[in-house]
Image (cartoon, rainbow, N blue to C red; front, side, top):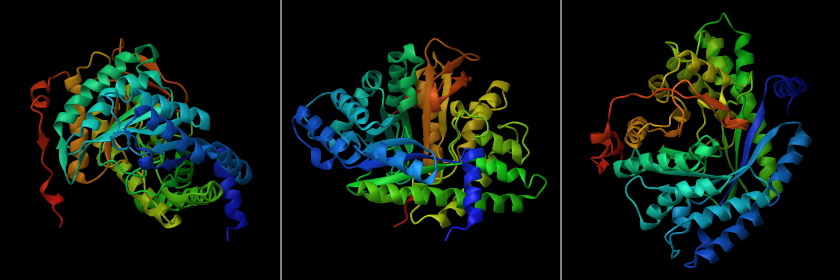
Length: 452
C-alpha cells in the first residue's frame, strides 16, 4: 500500500519539483506489413499504426488527469524501416517517411521513431536505400525521427557507415537550414543501440519485441536536486543514498502509469526507462544537480565523477521499483535541452572534449550539440567514431546527435523551440581527421567481446 505521506510527497514532487512522465511510447511491429509494392506497404503500415495507437494520446491524457501525474509526450516507435521495407521494389523510402508522419499526425503524437537502419557489421541494399533517404525524409516530415546503429561491442565499428553518416548529417543540415538545421536534431547515430528505448530521436521497435508494447520514460532532475539540497553538507555516501531513494520514488510513479497505460490500450507493458531527462525549464536540469553537488559549473573538474555517481545510483534505486527496467536508464546530458548546461557552454566551462569524457559514464552520448555549419563531414565522422569507440570498448550505449548549423559559427545561437530548447554553437577541434576517416572498412570488435 502507498502511505498518506508518500502521496503527499509525490504531489509535492509534481507541483514543485517538475516530476513528470516524460513519454509514453508505443512500440509497434511492422514485420507483417511487408509487400513488394511500396504503395501497398505504405497502406499497410499506416493502417496498423493507427489501429494500435489511435487511442494512445487519449489514454495518456486520461491517466494524467486521473492520477495527477503530468504525461508530457505520447510517441510511437516502429520496426526499423530498413528491415520492414526490405522487400519493397523501390530506390527511395521518402514515401515511407511521409506515411509515418501522416500516421503520427492522425494519432496525435509528437514524434514517431524507427526510420532506422542497423549497419554495425555491414549494409543490406535496404540499409543503403534508407540511409540515402534520410536527408530528404527529415526535410519533408515534421514528426519522423531517424537513427542508424554503426557499431556494437560484439561486432566492432562499421567505419564505412560512420564515414557516410558525416555526409548524411551535413546534407540534412543543408536541407533544413531555413529552420536552424533542425533535421539533425531528429537524427541519432548509435553504437550498441537498444531495442526498447522510449526516448526520441533514437527509439525503434526491436525485432525481439512483442507485437506491440508500452515503454515509459520517467524524468525528475528537479526532484533529485531538491533532495540533494537537504543534505548539502553531507558526504558522498549520504548523497548516494539520497539519490537511490529518490530514484525509487520517481520510478514507482512510472511503473503505475506504464501498467495502467498498457492495460487500457490492450498491449503488453514493456519497460520503464529510468533516465533523468532535463528540459530547458529552470529547476529541471542535470546541470543544476552538478552544482548542488558542489561544482561551480557543469564541466568543472569532478563533473565526470559526479555524473558517474548520479547515473549509478539512479539505476540502483530505480531498478528495485519496477518489474522491468530497460531502455537507456541513467542521466541524459543534452546541451540544448538543459539551461544550466547551456550556461556552462556559454562560459566555456563545458567543451566538446569534456562532454565526450562525460559520455563514458552517462546514458547516451553527445546529445543535441550545435557546432559550426562549416564543420566538415570528415570531422563529424571523426567525432562519431570517437563516441562509438567509447560505447564499443565499454560495452554501453553511446550516440551522437550533432547539429552543424548552416550559416552560423562559434558564439552564435540556434533556437529549436519546445523541449529541444536552444543552444550556443560550440567549437570543434580544428585539426583534420580526413585521412583517418577515409580508410573505411571495419574496426574489429574488442578482445573482451568474445564471451562464448
